[in-house]
Image 1 (cartoon, protein in one colour):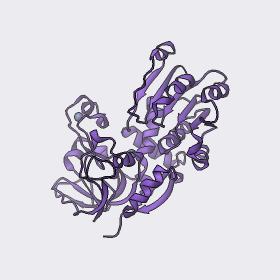
Image 2 (cartoon, protein in one colour):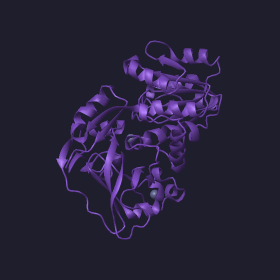
Image 3 (cartoon, helix red, strand yellow):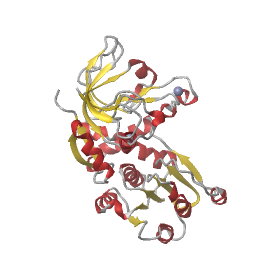
Length: 355
Ligand SMILES: [Zn+2]
Ligand SMILES: [Zn+2]
């Protein structure tokens, strides 16, 4: 089968290869991939980033959905034909603090399917039975209302939901600001809308393009600020009558916006950081003390996020479909990655090539 293989740690060391269909053991499942989402992290992997979680050679693709097509002889919970989506937990230690408190995404030993283990930019993915025993909800049934391609992008949707609802605890009537209008920013905006935020302010660079700003409005943004053309701190102060926002989400992943975030978060507010940037911050942390401001690093989601987002999709209050901008083949991954780099897409779905 054709697969997008990251074969080394270096930049660009990614290519389409013919690989064998995985063999499964008595407790394992084989999933026939139906759709897989291209994530910003895939571009980071391709560029030589996130080395600490990458395990080359490995098939990329951590946002995928599919159908169970083969089960080991000990498997009772799943059957051939089940429509499933994965939270891409491939392996966890089962013994650390995170695992013992069911926070499996924070397990230091965690291997993600699609970077630590073979993932979904291909035709078939193996799911280990020992992982399903430890983390039963790492594989979930797709609700009837949801298509395979919608299920494939539940990962970033749940990430945005958890940031806004579970971490920042946004209440109806709150003011929320989101930096970045890529997929995570847009899903954070949708989550703020679902939570009942009164004003949702999307902040990004004008180079993000009108398409993405239009999407931000479609997702629920009440105000748009192009931060290279106007001062976001002054504008947010104006929009919120001087109060600031109870929740500021960093889905942009550039540490230079920290002073801006501190300028627009209200006293006792929270900054939730989703976006990665390895550059040092290099400033005083005193504003966090003066304003009683919380900074929360956030990665991923939990079972509650997946359950609640699925319920919101079913209720028509969360839109996955509108986020899918392009559909391509796994063999066209290069072109897809470059489109993400040029910010031409929101979410690209890759479909497996014929075997
Ligand atoms: Zn991702
Ligand atoms: Zn662990």
